[in-house]
Length: 230
Image 1 (cartoon, rainbow, N blue to C red):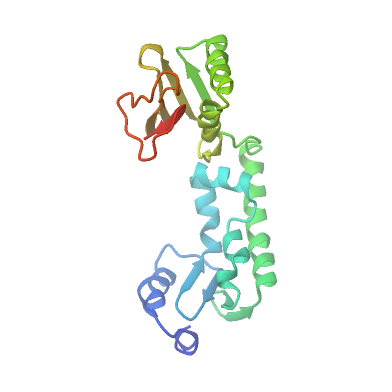
Image 2 (image 1 turned 135 degrees about the vertical axis):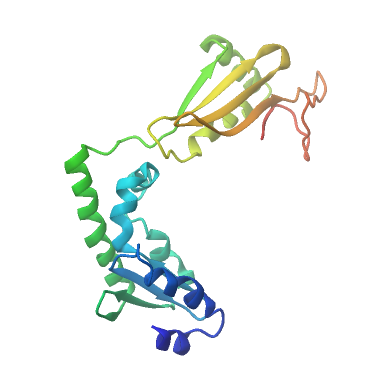
């Protein structure tokens, strides 16, 4: 491997000597692995450790629901297109191409997932984050959205939809959105297994006929309607 580094890398060879080599020689490392080497970087895809991570981390299982190949980034990104690829086993360092790397990844990942499912049951089918809206009725919420749209503005709905973009990492995970009528704002808090995560507010900033309102917040680019603040 050191020969490959000296032949290929024109800079930042410390990527290998300070990171890859200690990891490969460490007690927790398991073969096989895919090793990517470019002129100024290396990346180690530890396939042999994937089973331990998949069984231990619920977030990894939710990531698998979204993308079955956990290393897809490395296969699609043209940043790595001209790199050298190798399959590392206990006894050999074998040059491979990107298609062979993809096959090697799925040949290892798929049996791990199937084994987990056989032991624990099906993976969740839905990776969308749950949103709980409290302190406001459906009719009141619809009225606020309608008020926005009467001004040619859909900012409140846009703010609420943004929560759907967050990746789910646990079964017990949701965002609670609470309305405070007299403050003209919502607050929100993300809970993951009972622990508090992202917090913030959705603040109303007025309409042209009523004037701009900061409502206890600051916008670098002031505009009417509703806006998320964290």
